[in-house]
Image 1 (spheres, rainbow, N blue to C red):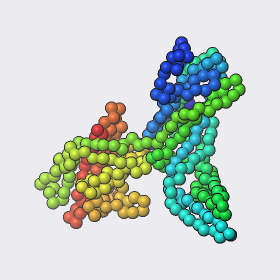
Image 2: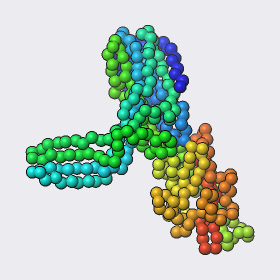
Image 3: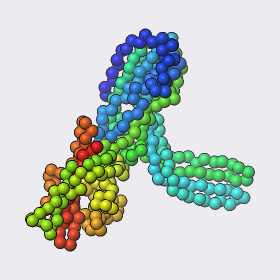
Image 4: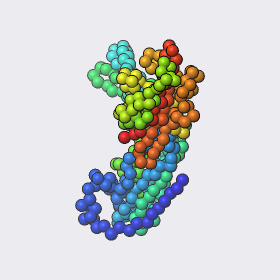
Length: 338
C-alpha cells in the first residue's frame, strides 16, 4: 500500500482560515489544528477493486497534531424482519414486519500516521477492495427495551448473526452499501474524533442513459432476403442497476424487460432466469450465448462485452434472442452512454 506524505508550507493567518467557507472546504476543527477532507466522497465502482485514494490535509496549530488514525466501518441496508412484542400482565403479543434494516459492521483501525510536530501535510493513502473489507464483520441489532406504564415494548431485528463477514467478491455488494472512514487526531495525548467522515459508496459503472448506436434484427421469415440494420437505431434507452453487477434494460421493445449482468472482466451475460423465475421476452423463451439455444447469427465472440471509456462514453455491446415458433428472433445492439 502506498502512503505518500507531501510536505506543504502554509502562511495562512487565523483570519484567512476564518474567511474560508468551511462547509465548502470540508475543514474540521480539532484541538491544535485543522483537518481538511480533500475527497469526502469516493465512488467504489464494482468490478474495479482498486486502488482508490483517500486524501486529507492536516494544518497544525500551536499545539501540534502528532498522530492521525483512520477507522473503517461498513454499512448496508437489507430487508429484515422487525419483531415487536408487547408484554402486559404476563401476556405477550408479537408483531412482525419486513423492514429496511441498516446494519453495521465493527469499526477497525485502518491506517495510522505519525506526524512530525512541525509539519503541515497532505496525507494520501491507497486501498483496495480486499484491504478495506479485511477484518470487518457484521453486527446483529440488539433488542431495545422500553417501559411505558404497564407495558414493556421489545424491538429487535433478526436474520443477521454476529460474525457474518463481508462478501469476498465485490460483485456481491449491494448498491447503497458504503464504508465510512472516520479520522481521529492526537494532540498532546488527547484524542479527538472529527465530525466528518469519508464515504466510500458502492456504485455501478454502467447504469445510465444510452443511445442505440447499432441495432440489427434478424427474423427467420426475412433471412436471407433481408434483415433490419436500423432497429431502434438512435433511440434513447435507460439502463438501471438492480444490484452490484445486475442491470435491467426496461421498456425494450415497448414493455419488454431485459436483465443482464456485467462481471469484473466486463463480460456481459444476458439472463434467462432471475431469482428463481424464468424470464421471457415477448412471452417467449430467451436465447442467449450461454443457454444452448439455436441462435445462428449472434456474434457471441465479439459482443456481450462492456467497454469503460476514459471520456465517459461507455459502451455495452449486447446480443440475444427470443425463440419464436418459426425460429429465433435475434438482436444485436451497441449502446453508447450519453
